[in-house]
Length: 73
Image (cartoon, rainbow, N blue to C red):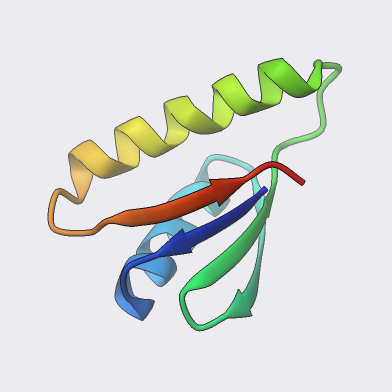
């Protein structure tokens, strides 16, 4: 999934968090990351639900940062 954040600091903070959750994260641009969830047998819908859960937790931990957009790969 491609995720755009409001700042570079937010992108780095999210990347650190998602990597601790077992995700693979690559920077596409300064504020845009490409995220691959840990390998599991799951449907695309389940993957979206899992990513939304990660993002909800991260947003609660980082209320000053904003997720601008999320695109399923």
